[in-house]
Image (spheres, rainbow, N blue to C red):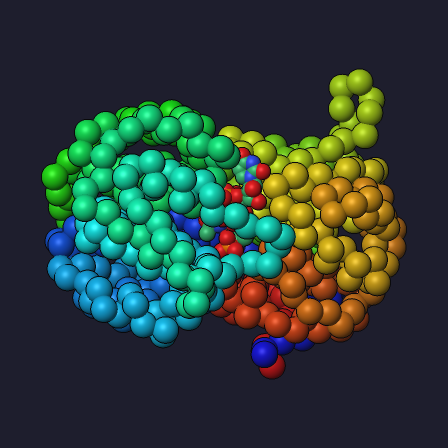
Amino acid sequence: MASFVIEGGHKLCGEIHPQGAKNEVLQIICATLLTAEEVIVNNIPDILDVNNLIQLMRDMGVTVAKQGVDTYSFKAESVDLAYLESDEFLKKCSSLRGSVMLIGPMVARFGKAMISKPGGDKIGRRRLDTHFIGIQSLGADFRYNDERGVYEITADKLHGTYMLLDEASVTGTANIVMAAVLAKGTTTIYNAACEPYLQQLCKMLNRMGAKISGIASNLLTIEGVEELHGTQHTVLPDMIEVGSFIGMAAMTKSEITIKNVSYENLGIIPESFRRLGIKLEQRGDDIYVPAQENFQIESFIDGSIMTIADAPWPGLTPDLLSVLLVVATQAKGSVLIHQKMFESRLFFVDKLIDMGAQIILCDPHRAVVIGHNHGFKLRGGNMTSPDIRAGIALLIAAMSAEGISRIHNIEQIDRGYQNIEGRLNAIGARITRI
Ligand SMILES: CC(=O)N[C@H]1[C@@H](OP(=O)(O)OP(=O)(O)OC[C@H]2O[C@@H](n3ccc(=O)[nH]c3=O)[C@H](O)[C@@H]2O)O[C@H](CO)[C@@H](O)[C@@H]1O
Ligand SMILES: C=C(OP(=O)(O)O)C(=O)O
């Protein structure tokens, strides 16, 4: 298990470029299974989750070639269906949440998929009902093998249908869309998730010959087609990384420019930081964050205490709440952070409290943060990263703290942030990997 040693208190200065979006690229790579032709994908981040999925595709028999620093081609002419039954494949799937999105394309094109319980962050219950019910309603048969703890999914031919999802699941919607594009007839998905990740997936599938309408809304209509073709796709910048950089700048009183953020795809994210009092300017497609000595949390119009809560897109992504929470510890004023979707993502606040933050954890979903207004610096600490976003929040806390901090289990951070210490050290941070 690797660790970061962080010397706190150094300001950042300069420009930083966000990597390609992790949660988009996981969908996109799975979708390359839908055609025998070559799909070229640009702006692929060099992160653990993505590299593991690329390796899994290779193991399945997909021809993968690295064509440039962040460009790969995928050609799924055939897939080794026997490998899907192997313990090795199932073990790899279980350590990677994105692998659940192999089901849709595999069933649609090859009539068969196997999956063990997928991994990902341990951030509370993460059910898969939306995926299973959706793909089942297209006509697939799900069988659970108790002995091996795996699901076997089979279908002769999928058939389009109407479905109202029980929740707007991000990976669930992606999985169902990827199954429906090759189904016979029309599929209508209501209460579909509509994050930019999904918009990008649907646009790529349409370039491959799919017929999807309603993109960016929660009502998708998919007319099934016989087959799909090759294409090129460029992954959007990672909006969670953009938000993480805004948070870092505010906590370290730094002036930075975040380059090429695809501002129009950030939704409510910039506004959520502004509600904490953080100034940021859109400059072309960049975000400029000026150095700020203080920032004051707004109140609601009726004067009541600000609440920042997650919600399905275009609401605020839950993946940024840990960052917003840590930033609030140095704001002026108080805020209630309400993590509605996940039930174990706030426990990391204990570590922030140890560092001197004023936080009341009300229950697994809600924390009240009373900001120090930069009047008291957090103390360096020794901590372990429980999940990817708590990991980055702890790194932000450590970068702003007095003294040396150590963060263990940084593999969690590596899942989603490319060479984070290298990129941050280049603009003034002091982070060492040991
Ligand atoms: C690989 C990937 O893309 N992971 C993202 C994806 O995970 P993932 O697709 O696994 O998450 P889901 O969208 O399925 O659901 C996330 C959680 O929110 C709850 N829920 C979801 C929708 C809803 O309308 N109401 C509700 O309560 C679910 O019960 C679950 O606990 O989306 C999550 C929610 O944005 C993000 O945190 C993850 O980073
Ligand atoms: C929760 C996340 O990832 P995963 O769904 O892969 O666990 C995340 O990206 O914040």
